[in-house]
Length: 91
Image (tube, rainbow, N blue to C red):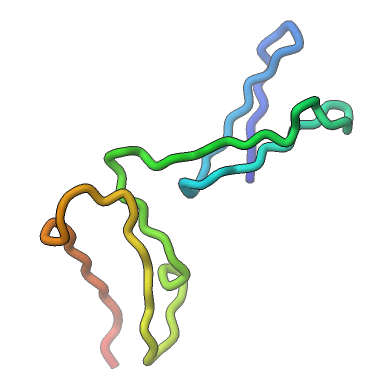
């Protein structure tokens, strides 16, 4: 995953990355090709409480004539509040 390292002075650095899914991320830190004590670290990434997260392999590709699945996570409310539209070419 791409990271950006920003020198802060005094042998300190700020590191940023953009997580793409709400899951634990393993962060490995090395300095001069040596592991930093305590590395790897675990960064727990959670979804924004107001953001619905949609995941599943069918979002990238789905086979013709077979059931395609994906998941909605972090949904607050009832099933009546959820509306899903799937569009595709008609043959």
